[in-house]
Length: 284
Image (tube, rainbow, N blue to C red; front, side, top):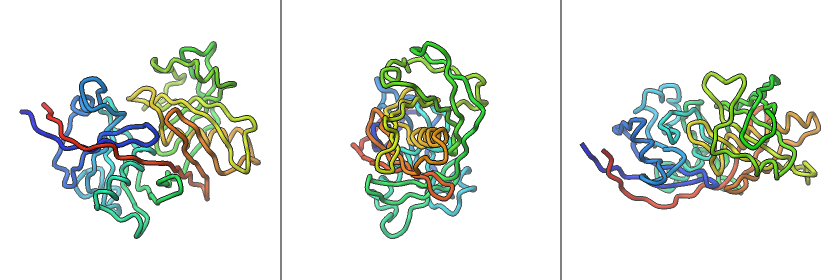
């Protein structure tokens, strides 16, 4: 039976989402329905969906009960994901604009499958404390169409898994064909987002490191931006650069520029969040 679903379209540096308000947890979308919503030819078009639901109304919210709101993030293929750095800023923007939360009165705590994340306002828009991170010294070999040989990548965990590959030039970065999923060896059990980065020359100016990045997101494909991937990329280059590396980074992605900073063992991501339009769609 068909039913009408209200939605809002939003994005963070081009990483776009279908936002569905479901405070009481009444909406149960199947993977195929999420994929239909995200389809860019036959649906609304997005890299994923953000269901706005109270932690108390979703089983996964039991682990994040101290946060009123839970970000139920699904990739474009319908699969659930732990965290989304751009998505959580868009989620915070939606809560704020809808009058469901007051981020100016106190930092906004949001439940995710990677735990509770805190969002505040920043000069770039919103900043999220992504949390603790881990950089793995064991290389993963990455084979991608457009690269002459497999390249070593560093595993970075920021609540969800990433593999970051350093390249030698912008032309090499632009020459990768990310319409085809890169192959990882060994393949992580739950897959990973794969980032390709080129450090700026010089790497650091005014105490801020700079890199450019492209990303293949698991369950989605290439996106214009990936917030947690931006954080992971900065962390990987910071790790490779050694003890003298800065704690502040500027990361350029096809959809814009995001800021990363490291403080007291946590990584923070800042950038804009935009709500584009609202509407209704009929779902089978």
